[in-house]
Amino acid sequence: MSAWEPAKEWRDDRIVEQLEQSALYRDYERAFSEATGLPLSLAPAGDGQFFCRANHQGNPFCQLLARHHQTCAACLCSQQETTGDGLAGPRTFTYFAGLCESSVAIRSGEKTIAFLRTGEVATLKPSRPRFERIARHLREGGADFDQAELSRAYFSTPVMPPEKYRSILDLLAIFAGHLSLVAGQLLLSNGNSEAPNIACARQFIHEHQGEPLELKQVAGQARMSSCYFCRKFKEATGFTFTEYVARTRVETAKNLLLNPQVRISEVAFEVGFQSITHFNRVFKEITGQCPSKYREELPGWLAGVKDVRPLTRTGKQSAII
Image (cartoon, rainbow, N blue to C red):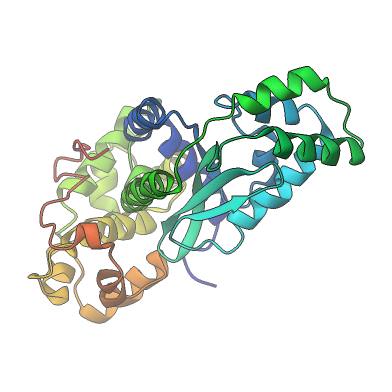
């Protein structure tokens, strides 16, 4: 088992929670909904309960269907199909009522940790014959609806040309790539209720990550004994001291790798690794990819970016987050 395996599921949940609470996500969610009229949700990968509590704020028809277990089950099956294999690009499913729902994966290395979901929109204008078929299908499935209420909800469904919807999904994929880039950095960010001495230790690590760092040295910055510091640091961050230093260096390396003019060996020594072999091994253990593959698979919109540094040497977060 890798040294980075313990508590991985807890860490993934923490990443998703911090992504959802970040100003970056909240601002994009607001702008996305205002610009498109579509809902946007962030769902942890593998969270089956999410589908039953999905946001139906933008579509009265979906709200009405969600009242009935049978129709919720049909939506659940279609939603699971849109997130089944965690492909990086948008996946869209059109379920029985003619509405589209889509998801885009957010990744940490090669692992999918969450999905951005949107949709509840029709790409064909609602029609009376189609409504009659849907209503008949629902009655045959045992759902009991008020026909007039169902009709009003159905004909209020948002309609969007397929070309426009695909363009919206392209923008969503870019944002998912951005969230994937900052996910690991959010996991290393300071908690709001963190003790000042632990925050001081974090800051010292970020400021000196390119230098040799010893436990006793950092514990001294926190004014703690090494043993006590190890326990409190793990409680606060979820990482051991060694794990946290390695992840800090890898997150900085990921940003330096955005610049194709910088050699991988230069990146390794810049962030504090003493050998290329050690850098390659730790980078792959944390991200699931070796540095060269990570660089090769960077999204096209990031090609040639040279100065994306969400965590600065002062330990503070920059505007990217």
